[in-house]
Length: 380
Image 1 (tube, one colour):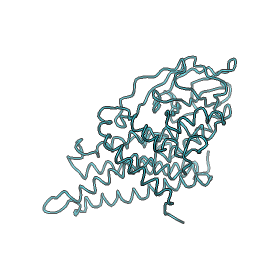
Image 2: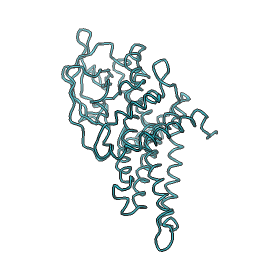
Image 3: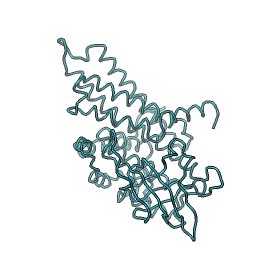
């Protein structure tokens, strides 16, 4: 086993960390307070080549591996959770399905501009009656004179109203169970409307909308992959997305750990640093253990993906553990700081609010346990 990052992975970490500290972190509090979408940050990320990091150079990407992509998400999350979620969703949900299942023409038309940072991609999957149970999708698409006609509604869609394209899941064969397909809908298509941005507990710079489709017409060739195979496609997509959310959780936890550790060294009580007391030092030690384990699990899942080997079980394990330990680290960082941790004078309360979504997004912790148990028990 070799646990050393390659020179290229080390270079990407150094470059993204430098960028995140200089260009992302200074705006994180403002974004959280105002809900302002960080458009300028993403323009600069495009210039750095980050918006298409894992995709082939042929389609505007950088051709980096999955570990490098996880590292990039982790470093951005260490600076700003909102920016990290937008970035992770763009790569893992808005672009990856086209990279995995799209035709050459679809990749040129939709993946290339997204990978080059000219627009964001978004994935419209969740519905009011179809969250964890994605097979219960009610949005429909009928084929009519060479066009897909889409009707239905989606909710909790990251970047929906600011994306250049939406990948929409819809029932295309109503008589067949789970006959769901994925269809690409360009921005500006008539009949698409968006709800107001959701007011969220955290990640306030990430736009989240409900989306309604009323007789939305797109060309037949916008079908992504095989008709009726959308459920299988987006389950495969979510495996990769879970690695990204695990990396995001690690980045937020790393930031909280650094603040808590520094505070434990500097703050004194009863004549000595609070880190000298076991009640605090044990929390710091547990944070370090959790971070190390979570990072190894996420990198393992990313490595398996790069090897072309099955990694659904490992992705679920990584996402489950990283999200839960990450939320715990952010919560305990508040405890280490005491009253200061509960105020906005320190960023740990923001890290905690931002980290909570990682236990819900792209499959709740309960769904991850279900996936893992099915693998262990041999049931599908």
